[in-house]
Amino acid sequence: MNNFYQKGFDLRKQIKELIILFMSNESNCMKTADGESLSFIFRECGLDWGDYENATSGQQRYYGVAAMRELEKEGKVQRDEATKKWRLK
Image (cartoon, rainbow, N blue to C red; front, side):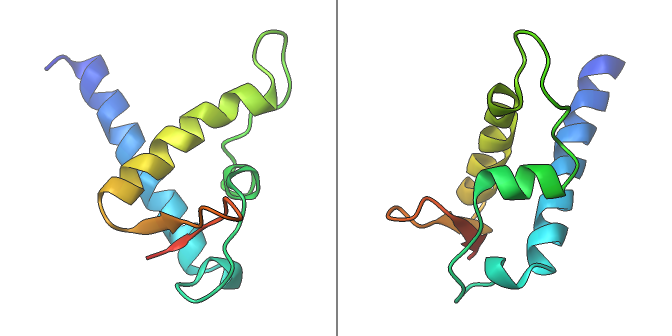
């Protein structure tokens, strides 16, 4: 594993930790709450770079989706299928 790959792996791990920390401190993200939208979580965690040509904020959220799906796979978060909002599991 080269150094760049490892740094990227470490960043992904830190981003997942940041999201869980944020959700743990956000009342709407608690297990019994309604949840929050991915956009809200993404922005509040400082992961939105703003709108750029060919890289709008909406397009950048795909990275957030990947992080949330990883957390979902790990059994840490869940998505309400009706509202599409995320909360801790």
